[in-house]
Amino acid sequence: MSKMMKATIFVEPGRIALDDRPIPDIGPLDALIRITTTTICGTDIHIMKGEYPVAPGLIIGHEPVGVIDKLGSAVTGYQEGQRVIVGAITPCGWSNASLSGHHAQCGRAAPHGYEAIGGWRFGNTIDGCQAEFLHVPDAMANLAPIPDDLSDEQVLMCPDIMSTGFSGAESGNIRIGDTVAVFAQGPIGLCATGGARLMGASQIIAVETVPERMQAAQEMGADVVVDFHKEDAVEAIRRITNGRGVDVAIEALGLQQTFEAALRVLRPGGVLSSLGVYSGDLQIPLDAFAAGLGDHTIRTTLCPGGKERMRRLMNIVASNRLDTTRLVTHRYRLDDIEKAYELFAEQSDGVLKIAITP
Image 1 (cartoon, rainbow, N blue to C red):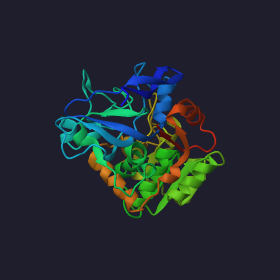
Image 2 (tube, rainbow, N blue to C red; image 1 turned 90 degrees about the horizontal axis):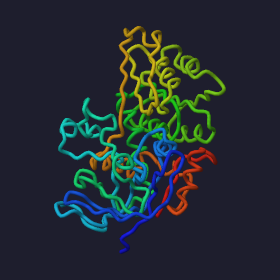
Image 3 (cartoon, rainbow, N blue to C red; image 1 turned 30 degrees about the vertical axis):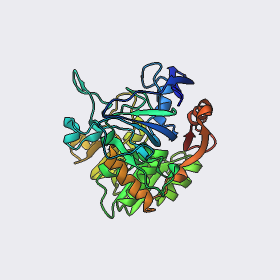
Image 4 (tube, rainbow, N blue to C red; image 1 turned 135 degrees about the horizontal axis):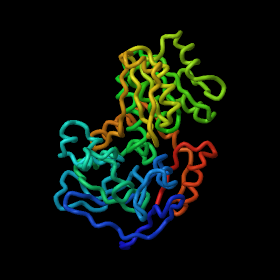
C-alpha cells in the first residue's frame, strides 16, 4: 500500500486544493478507514470561504462512508474489511457530556466552559474525510457497521444531514397531530421535513423558493410549500393555520430573518427548534417574544453522533421509511473535488448533495 493518499486541503480563505498527504497512523483506541463515498456539506463551504476558521493545511470533510482498513490494538468487536459509517460528531463515550447523554457536546474543556463546537472534530480540529483514508478516534464509540443490503449512497446522509435534520424534529418534541413549519428546504431542512412526518405531524408547511427544492419538500412529506418570494411566509402560515400558529417551527438556514419568522409563526407555548448555524448575534423581537411571557421554548441542536445514533438512522433507511438517495443529485470523483466545490458553492444545476468517490 502506498504511504501517501490524496486529500482535500483547506489552503486559505477562498481556496481548497487536492494534495498528497501521508496516510495517518492510528493509536490503540482508533481505526483507519478507507473512504468509499463522502460528500460536501454547507459547513465546508463556510470553511472554504473563510467564514468558519480552521487551520491552513487541514483536511476537510465530515461525512464518511468506508471500509475498515486497520484497527487499533485495543479495539474489539470489529474486523478489517467491514463496511462502516462514522457520524460527523465523534463522542468519546466517557466524557461528562457523553455520560450525561449529550453525546454531541463531547467537546474539549475550554477556559470559559465547553467550546461551542461540541464533538465536531473531523475537518474542524482534526483531519477530515474528503480523502482516501480517515483516522477515526475512539473507534468503539463511533464505528457503525453498514447492513450488507444498503448501498453507500443509501447511508451517505446518515453521518450529518439526516442526523441533524431529524434532530430538529426531535428537539421540537413533535407530537401526533402537530402542525409544523420548516424554514428552508436545503438538505438539512428536507431531512427535518422527513423527520417531522415520521414523528407524526399531521400538517407540515415547508418554506422555500427554489423549484427543485420545493418539489423535493413534497416528496419528503411536506403538505404545503410556501414560496417566500411570492408571498410573506409568516402571513401565509398564519392564514393556513387559521390564525392559530404552528406547534413547532424548525429553522434550518441560520439567518436572522428566518429565525424571527419561525418565532412569529409559533402558537403560544410552541417550540422553535433551531438547526441553523448563525454567523452573528441574533436579536429576538419583543412582540414576537411576547415580552418573554408567551411560554415559548427555543431549542438548539448540534448533529447527534456516535454509533448508536448511526445504527438507528440506518434502520430508518433499511425499513424504507424515508428515501434519502433522492438528495444525491450529482456525483464526482475525488480528483475533481474542486469542480464539485464550485458547483456546490454556486448552488447551481439543482444541486442538493454531491457523492464524492475516491
